[in-house]
Amino acid sequence: MSRTVELPDAVYAALEDAARASGASTADWIAAHLPGTGKANVPSATAKDDWLDRDFLKTYAQETDDSVSLEDVRAAMSKIPGRLADDIRAERDAHQVRGRS
Image (cartoon, rainbow, N blue to C red; front, side, top):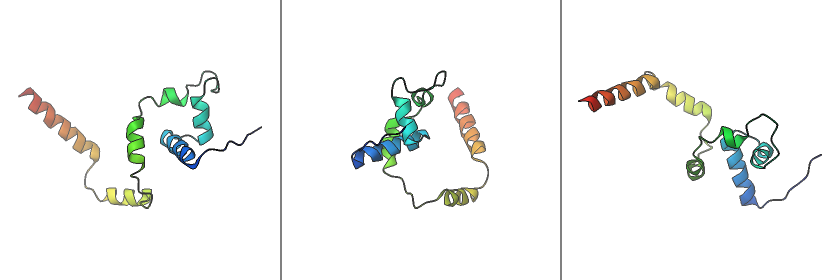
């Protein structure tokens, strides 16, 4: 059985944003945040997503640009020479060397 719930547009938009940010459907997000609705021995979305900075997600969700596709981002990033991991390691190592001096 399913039910219909009417929500103001702004509330539903916030629900969709929160669900999208956690990778869940709106129904799953609601179920994960209501006591007693989760499956036994399965951590709720709240427990799984404690590492998420929800304030950051709310702040920058308004600044997203849906006109840029994932393919466009991948194409642009493929033009960057080298590997990002190598750059991160090099920066970390340089910082560690400076810290020891």
